[in-house]
Length: 274
Image (cartoon, rainbow, N blue to C red):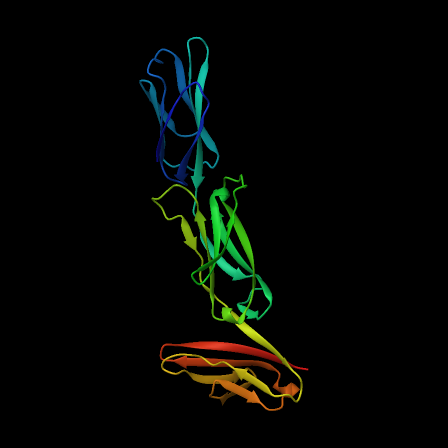
């Protein structure tokens, strides 16, 4: 990457963006009539070479997270003119992971949960934008503009969500993007997809009738299988499962799977007897 900066009587700061480990080049030009005056380029890393009133700075592999260049010249009357070139290294994250804070993809309808997006070893943090998604829908974006940390950091962003029955089977994910004016490298890294399973909680009184409905719409018409974790037997093949008079022994989790040649969907019910 190459940047040119011209020394004037004003002190102006510029920023050179460079990918960590890449080579970098900058050109410093002083005024045309400055030959014979004192001018130069101050740098902590790399090499520089003068050619007339220009100075070329090069480094084969830029790995210093905090560094800058100072181009200057001094007039015959003693006035000094200089410009600083700040150098910002950027690094896309090693990986991005999404998870629920409680460590499981099983959710209860109506309950609140923390959706976490882990971004590993990204720099600089102030240019990071984290976006949470449910399917193709963007749920929220988080910014870190106030950060002054130039070196790679690992950051966890958290989004609070409330589970609903419409979220059953939804894909949650996130991505991390470095908001830089650089097009030649991919600066967005996405997480894996997290498939949520939402349980519907139902409370009934002992002796009442229980009716669970998982009607699905599809073509061909879906077939149904109802199961209970404590029973290996298939106990219903319709979209509705009923118990005329519930007992405490009927308490627990019921799973309804609707399927046709195009796919399979499972709905989970949990009910308690009072």
